[in-house]
Image 1 (tube, rainbow, N blue to C red):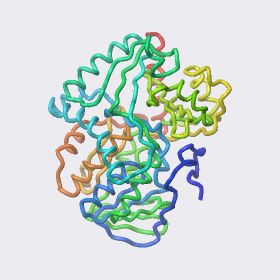
Image 2: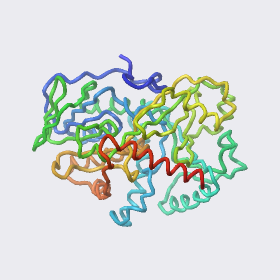
Image 3: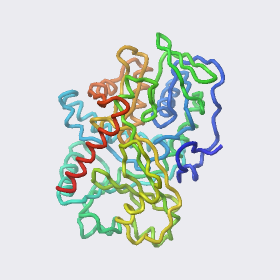
Image 4: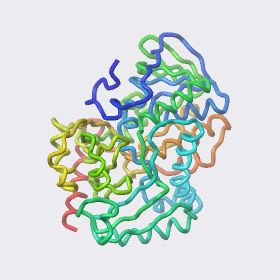
Amino acid sequence: MPFDTQHTASYYAASARHTLPYPSLEDELTADVCVVGGGLTGVNTALELAERGLDVVLLEARRIGWGASGRNGGQLIRGIGHDVSGFARHVGQDGVRYLKQAGIESVALVAQRIERHGIACDLRWGFCELANTPAQYAAFNDELDDLASLGYRHETRLVEAANMRQIVASDQYVGGLVDMGSGHLHPLDLVQGEAAVAQRLGARIFEQSPVVRIEHGPRVTLHTARGKVRAHNLVLGCNAHLDELEPRLSGKVLPAGSYVVATEPLPQALAETLIPQNMALCDQKVGLDYYRLTADRRLLFGGACHYSGRDPQDIAAYMRPKLLKVFPQLRDVRIDYHWGGMIGITANRFPQVGRLSQQPNVFYAQGYSGHGLNVTHWTAKLLAEGIALGQSQGLDIFSAVPHLTFPGGKALRSPLLALGMLWYRLREKLG
């Protein structure tokens, strides 16, 4: 069975190490917790709960890692994806410091999980933020000061324009900020490896088992086409693919398309010239570019987040000009893979984590806004604490941040946000 059933085939699907399928649900089961969604959120929540001795059933509509968890740029970068200082009025200064630390410690959590369980996923350390303007470069000083105040223990350093060729063979940038505590990896190998760990710990995993209906109550009942699960607690980890399974949550997340290409394998000398220190790289634009080298020396280049709800007809043709603007020396290089996927965007670019107010046995985490590789692991830990222990200070802090429902209903959410993002891009060009 091919891994991809709707999207174009990704490089990750073609090169994944863990490809054995899990069965579909065709029975009636009971469990302490049912987790819906086989991405990084669901898999790691199941793993955390199984470690705590709970009986867990995980239901995935397609394959483990089929969504953004197994399609993303593979950049394991500190932070939650937003300047959390603005949330002080909701969580206080101590809460802000907790959120900043969580953005750092979540990367360490991923690294510890990989090392502890021997998950082969091509983890490589080194990341550089790329400044497109002098103002962006100047802002890196504030970022360094903030990291110092948090006691960040990894090497960080500024790179001036004159030295940028030591980082990347492109003339697009006026400087950079190197962070050796962030890096890159093969995300599909990561999530599938973690699923295998969760299964070894006792979690029961089912693929090709979309949930079609939920019955709420003291025990939650989930119905699939050919099966049923009754559980004391439910975790919804569907993110951009929640659809209308839970309308109280789906209206708070906008599914947005993001696109990636991977070149043919590059000669070693060329690869080492393009990115001499084999770092992950990401610029600062509204419609950002991010890229890195894979383990077999392909350039993996992504970005171009779309809010319109329509994918480009030819992803490779759409992304090639963006790639060549950064690396014109690759004009004759072949693109072997091109693919897209849906990420979950929130109005405030901050993840939504908590439990439903009227159904306290229903937990959720979603809306990572493109920064889910590390944060999913942290939110999974918080969800497991809330379920297994009955309380979690971190879960309370995340839950205290309010979230808006996108206006206009399902039909108008994407067009309205697309107009808003167009305004930000115009401001960027004029500025």
